[in-house]
Image (cartoon, rainbow, N blue to C red):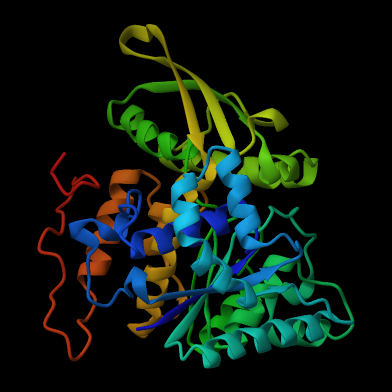
Length: 401
């Protein structure tokens, strides 16, 4: 099941860390730490193996992949020995990372993107291709009547700049017969017209905004407060990050899109939105590392006031990269199972998941495991799905909570 991963933003930190990581695991230079598809409950013969993944992508940057990997070594993200060991294989990916097309109309741009996807699939003899958006966060676009109807959108693309880049890639992916994953809070496939297009072409899509740090903790802690019937009075957080993502989020319009994505879990899990806000500040000196500090105030029995504080220090690319590999493998397998349209079962991975889904991490994990364990086993294989599928309340390690 040779499977292509087409990365939008392929020369960025998350993309290069994903490629280096896959190459390192494939060469037995590293363990697949952080890849949940390697846990027993999610092992399934329908998943393409890490050794079967082929990488390509688009970017507006011209920085070479090996050069970017060395920059990530200098930033403390990647181990120097691993990058040195996979440098030749990483350089071999370079011809499949092309400059992002820019046509005279959006229709022309989308046609060129789709042509690159088809060419990539055919040249490498791939069974299918998953397009994964790991590019910079976009501003929320103004509403447009064409967003509601695929035919109206197709007409508008010939003479209007109607779609943001992430949605153009979703459109191109669907018309090329590829699935699509949005790891960012950008628009992506979250338009009725694009949902119609995905259904027409029989391809699945997933999103949005990978859950790697502060929101991951919120999805664990918020259900705890709800289940213990404690009243959360306020929840405020400050996020400090550098790197390209931090620079992008320094722009108010991109910052607003990201903050909206991060707040949804509290509203959906608690059933109300406590006081407080989430801030994202750009600190260039910390590079690809990020720090989140949250203060939670809550009331207990007889109105007693209490508080919880936590600090999260993480490496954004190292947290995101294994999830990118997981999502590509799961989405490709869902496509092979004949599924199309949104994949709400992948909510476990996202801050702002598509559809009406639970937002507590334990419930999301249970739903994900039950979904994968229900897949058909491909013909010609004796391998069976992992026998350790969790029951309700199971934790990601497979043991009951």
